[in-house]
Length: 489
Image 1 (cartoon, one colour):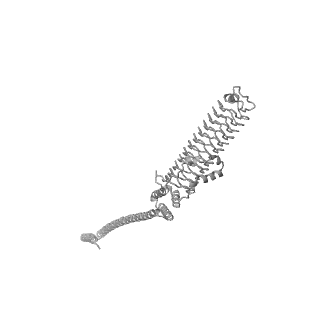
Image 2: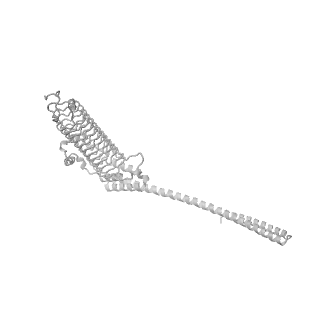
Image 3: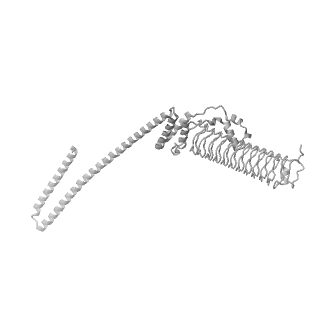
C-alpha cells in the first residue's frame, strides 16, 4: 500500500474515533441527566437519543460511501483517459504502419515500373491499382504516376506524314461503300498495324476503370501528346481526360464515356467510337478520318475544323454541334440528327445524308457537291451560297429553307418539298424538279436554264415570271414560258 493511501486511511480512522468519542460522551451526559426524569420521559429521551445516533451513523456512512464513490469515479475517469490515450496511440501506430506499408508498396511498384521486363512492369501497374483501391487517399497520386508512365513511355513521335498529305493521297471516288473504305483504311494507314505495348495497354485499362469519384476536384487525367494507337478501351470511363495532341488512331472506344474530355487536335483516324458518349466534348481540329461514330452522342460537341473525311456517323446525334469548316467528305450521316448544327463552310462533298435531320441547320457556304440528301429533313435550314451541284435531294423537305445564291446546278430535286423556300438568285441550271412542291417558293432571279419543272406542284405564273429561264426550261403544261425569257445561245 502506498504512503498516500496509508495517510488517507489514518485520517479517516482519527475522524471516526473522534466522532465515536464525542457520541459516547454525549450518551454518558444524557444518561446522567435523564435519571432525574420519570421513566416515561427516560424512555422517550432514550428513543430520541438512539434515533439521533442512528442518523449520525447513517450520515457518516453516506459520507464515507460518497467519498469512495467519488474516488471510484475518479479512478474510472483516469482509466477512460488512459484507454483513450492507448487507442490514440494504437491509431497512430496503425497509421504509421499503414503509411510504412503504402510507402514500401509504392517504392517497390515504382522501382518495378522501370524494370526491363514487360511482365514485371505490368505487375507493378496492377499493384498500384490495388493500392489505389485499398487506400482511396492515394488514388489520385497513383493516377498521376500511371499517366506519367504512359507519357514517358509512349510519347508522340513524328512519323513523317501530315494529315494534309494523307488526305491528298486519298482517292475519294474509290470509297463509295463500307467495304471499300475498310480496304482503303488498311492500305493507307500502315502505322496502325503496330500493336500497343502490353504495359501501356494495362496502364490505360487501369486508368479507364478507376473510381472517378476519387479523382481530385478541378484536376484532369493528363494523357496529352501520347502515342496510344490501337488502344483497347471499350466501355472505358474517360470522363474529363486530357487527350490534346494524342494519337488514338485505330483505338477501340466503343461505348466509352468521354464527357468533359478534351480531344482537341487528337488523332482518331480509323478509331471505333460506336455509341460513345461525347456531349459537348472539344474535338476542334481533331482527325477522325474513317472513324466509326455510328450512334455516337456528339450533341453540342465542338468539331470546328475537324477532319471527318470518310467517317461513319450513321444515326449519330450531332444536335447543335459546331462543325464550322469541318471536313466531311464522303462521310456517312444517314439518319443522323444534325438539327441546329453549325456547318458553315463545311466540306460535305459526296457525303451521304439520306433521311438525316437537318432542321434549322446552318449550312451557309457549305460544299455539298455530289452529296446525297434523299429524304433528308432540311426544314428551315440556311443553305445560302451553299454548293449543291449534282446533289441528290429526292423527296427532301426544304420547306421554309433559305437557298439564296445557292448553286444547285444539275441537282436532283425530284419530289422535294420547297414550299415557302427562299431561292433568291439561286442557280438551278439543269436541275430536276419533277414533282417538287413549289407552293409559295421565292424564285426571284433564279436561274432555270435547262431545268426540268414538269409535274411540279403549286407553281404559279408570277413565280416563273420572276425567275430567269429560257426555251430549254421544261415547264408544266399549264404554265406558259414568259415572253421575256431569252432564247438559248
